[in-house]
Image 1 (tube, one colour):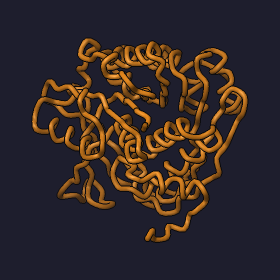
Image 2: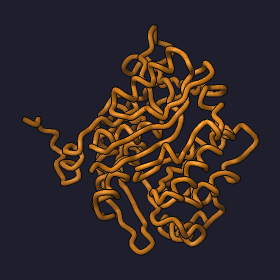
Image 3: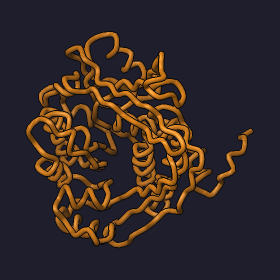
Length: 333
């Protein structure tokens, strides 16, 4: 039976000038939908898993269109709820070579930001699931979203479901009177797998020193939060806006494992690459040993750089081929 993943978070409209035009050049905008957690669910669905995304959309044509987008990409939408009228959105100007990408968000007052814990029956949602995934973006959106996320995590714990959190967040997102240092630790305390960075560990938990290695910081994090079984990091070396190098790292309480460095020389779209890494990690940990899982996650992340839009629409065969060292990009016949 395929493994089942549940994710929770906001889905937004992404509006971009065609190709690599700047905002000042554009006379039209291309529309796709995306959100970190939904991106993870869709990526896992393309890898062959069962996946459902829980969110709240506006009760209008945009909310229905976004729901159809999720269905189109193999997600169950039976737990999507509707209310209010505003869809969260962001505007993306894609960078190239030495010009960086630029993102402008408009999500305050969105239907998702107004979500409340009593709107979701998490025991019903999580029934039969193998994994629940959250990110540090969701609890930053609103107090209701943070409380809903904590309810989901605690329910997953009660049901024996593995919980992962991609916890990196940004201070400027927290606008409702709470800080990430007040909220994130409660969520991490009940999580089994944490995706973060050295800076994230230091800033969110006041753990370690700036000179400490990621391995050392990961070990300290597990000592403080013993439910955590694995701490994971994606390292990105940026040579230009079009040329990056990717490597995955995992500490499982005993071993510190690094993937091979993957060279990405012609980036098509880097948005959603962290989500592709998280999806690859989830699939990998459910199907492989840790050494193969981190290689699988890195390969999935690298392939997302070649896909326009937020979502990594690559097959299990694609990822396994790159994971095994086939970087040729040769036609599959």
